[in-house]
Length: 66
Image 1 (spheres, one colour):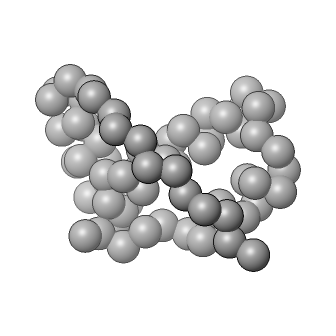
Image 2 (image 1 turned 90 degrees about the vertical axis):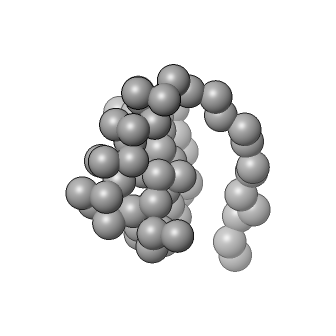
């Protein structure tokens, strides 16, 4: 069963957004999917993410560009 996603307004500097936009394009993702992937990786590395949540997110794969 898919978990609901949480919408969240994120305010970041334009320079950082531009960086994520280019990075997302390199990996064929949307900016939103790229930010989510980076956050997921950081949480996983810090040991803050449950194993089943990490696996579920990995199975979904990248979100196609909008």
